[in-house]
Image (cartoon, rainbow, N blue to C red; front, side, top):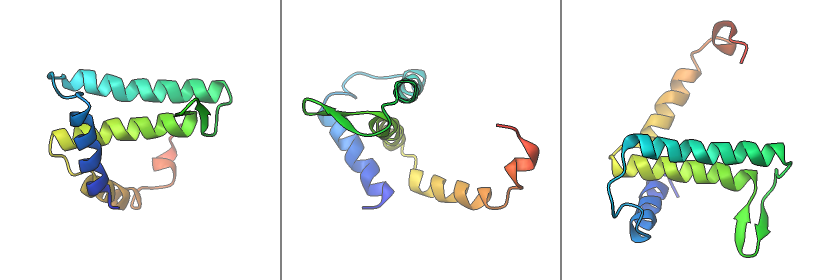
Amino acid sequence: MRIASIQKEIHRTAKEKGWWDLPRSDGDCIALMHSELSEALEDIRNSKLRIYFEGDKPTGLPIELADCIIRILDYAEKHSINMEDALYAKMKYNETRPYRHGGKAL
């Protein structure tokens, strides 16, 4: 499945589950993406580095990273942003950048 297809499926599910019934600001959407990364950081801090289950619910670092990607792709689809094209464009550009982008430490 291509990224564009996954993006459409993610957004379809989000709409079906009511996540777009009420308007959400761009800031709210970005904050929700950020919250998933914060949860990923907590999983790293707590050494929850693999997928594990709490009942039927998958959790752990890989799941929080997936949640962030899901939120990004959902937002992108809502706003007609082709993330597949954006990813390829950015990857191509990154290949032209110097080692560590000219000396960045982090």
